[in-house]
Length: 258
Length: 299
Image (cartoon, rainbow over all chains, first blue to last red; front, side, top):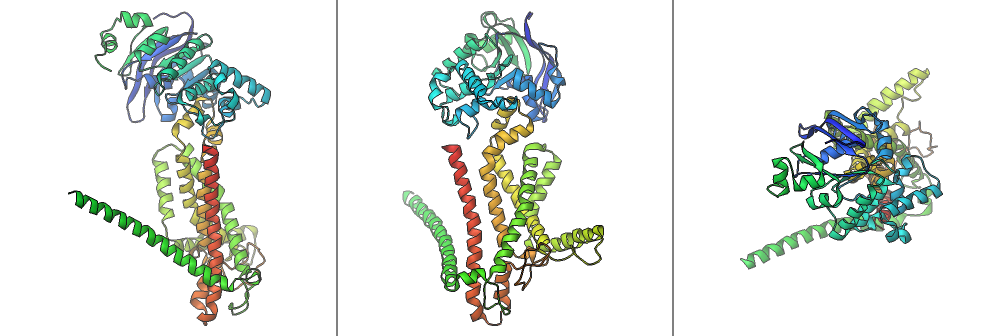
């Protein structure tokens, strides 16, 4: 589909694990800036591998790649050396994992401030201002402002996930990748995180992998359907859910397989 | 049917409880015996004086000093090296044939009998390393190619190194993989992930493992038999190139070579009590470190 203001674009992008399993292959798609794009599909369809491939977290699994991922400024993520990759992950692409991952032994304040260490910010005033701004944006500040010195692991699941989002956006990245961020949350926390995702789209390009089709409908401007590692269909969310052009997409949406 | 299940349950509980009690009884008996018999001869003079010629009188200060220096020098060699090797294996190395070969070697080395390390220390550290140093520096007399505290510490370090590597690796493995991935997603380099994410969480377990392996080293005798420990050096100055006396070896000597068993027995028990106290202290430090770390993580 044609997108004018692209934040990120993949060309024939593929991820292959060392054991030969194909995560995804030949995926060419663009992500519109300041929009939420959902990636849906059945289990094992490659949506998480694709998302992990976008910031090359898949390097950690010794994956091999094909194709390219082009940023707004024309840089190809696949050509970055390890140090450039660190800068990219720290500054330009935030990532939130499926399960909340607070750092053990860190206070709430220290945890949210962790990314600032990598960019060399140590001034206490700057740290406090940035941490507060990120937590306000992640709708967490009001709930924890009086207990910033408590351990981050003491927060509830929903709060921990919003803490992870605050941590991911503290350096104001252009792109925010969310890997099923609500899969381990209760309905109330899910609603909070979904509202947050919609608000974040004003400043960030959000890509969310979700297993929950209702969630994709609620939060995403555009939706991509993956099946067996390939991109099957990509369109505005309304079109995907009301008038899918591919039979596989239609079958998935009506629940013939999951 | 129900009666049979009840009986089996009773037998199971009885056997496991009896086994546990048996272990506790053995430890209580050994410690009780050593404490009761050892404390009878214990005195300030015994701890601070040197032995007399027949070693059936006097104190054990040179042995305490030798053991303490041996453990300290061994730790200086084995603790940093063990930590670095374990961090490399767990955090840096890829899980390939090289990793498997190194891990398999480390596990095998940990199971090698300690006397073999003694022979290795004599052949490698004393003869090869010491001999090479003498040759390089141009000493005509043997200065480094001698049995001494330095090579004993290296030999003991080689003995505890595999245990160190395994214990530190196990502590590192306890840090969930997601924590590392979360660090990477924040833009950390590999070293920053280790420094800011992995080590703060693993440090308690690492220290515990290190202290426990050091305490094992403190209680070993066989590896230093051929390398530097001596039967009688009452005026040990602390020079790393001198032979030294050691608590474990002193116990061995008193138990096997004393002509008068009745006179040697009190010294033997007291020395054993000192050695036990030393190794228990190391073990307690390990437990306390683990407790402090867990409190910090779980508070």
